[in-house]
Length: 256
Image 1 (cartoon, rainbow, N blue to C red):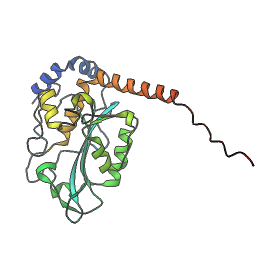
Image 2: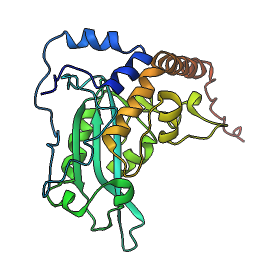
Image 3: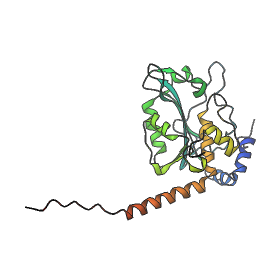
Image 4: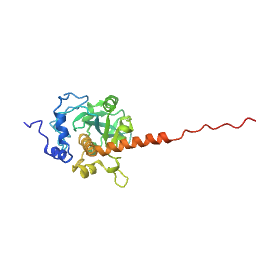
């Protein structure tokens, strides 16, 4: 039996490149994290089939599944409406700072699904048979991300599907971070993972666990510079607000 404390070689090599190992060691030496996490999806198998995200080069083997101050989110969509061209949430995954899953649920949309988009989403009809109702997932996710740094790629799409908002100051979007842009345009997460992390993802059906971990690792790699840029932007806005002159009240016409 594989030792649960031993890191996957690929994961260990990636963390070593990012100087991430020492921080993880100190974290693991603390108290044991809670074993049961709200909404954590159990592995499912149908007719002996393996889990859709079983093979994952970014998978950590640390036992720390606590809900950290930074949470990465990734969603997969299905098609609703008569033509199936309207997107609705079909699965959502949240991972913590260490890459461990803290929430992973298939979601039953309010509208009838006409296109499961399986080639991209990895979602099949059987996955939604016992899926949670959209409103339940929406409420649980809102509670989990409240007051936390939310990491992800093109988060506006995920938040739109959830019908949720999040403070702009607490969003870390790898699709909008200036050093990750090319000529002012966003790069695909797949390309960023390959270029910055040296990891191949999204080869075939997308795995939201893998994508969320990739986004988190991109954030961790640029954490210091990113947080400094956010603080500098906040300071600049405060200065501009103080300098902005108050509008003078218009005087009415002189009395005749």
